Length: 248
Image 1 (tube, rainbow, N blue to C red):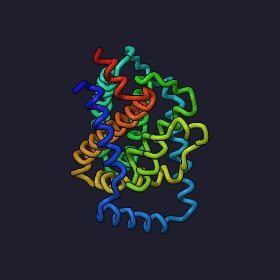
Image 2: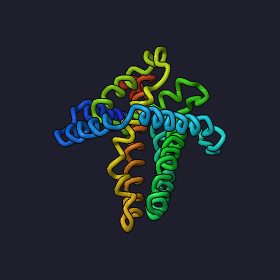
Image 3: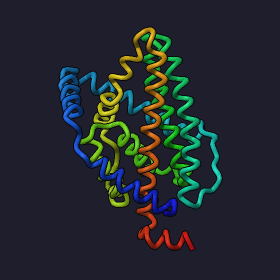
């Protein structure tokens, strides 16, 4: 099989996996988290929503200035994904060091891990979009990036909703004006709450922080590859025609 054929088959398997309903444990956990969230006053939810919204927009706005990364022109899928995996390795190592450092620092530094890790994740996605040649000055491209982020760190139900938007992006981009920021922050917090809570405990915080950040970057890397791969193949049209032309 060519790289493209194998990648396309993997993409189909991933889409099926993303459409599966969650296990009993996942459903129970999400129900418990929803009940806990209902106990939090609405004012607190609004404050968290605005805080994360501001954080995300600040990183996205400044990434074109902060990120000095330049990438060679990648014409084919294999070249693009090789570059992405190289960048993932760099960001994963950065996240591991950050998680170990803040985890070893107890409660105060542990709380600082949240915005730092969020920044690392968004900058990685920014590089992925650049490798694919998308213009991140376009508002729609930043929305797509946030959908990829949400795809990586959401419950099964929200993940299926987001997958639909990504699969139909060319149509959705014309009508989608913004993400649901309250859902965005709540899904993200629910996804990482337990592991980040363990990171605050003295003695184990550094190890937990390093391991958790490694796994979270892995999750984001896999999701980003499949989401942009999906868009890549959708833009090509008929994959069989493309693969035959590539082989010749």
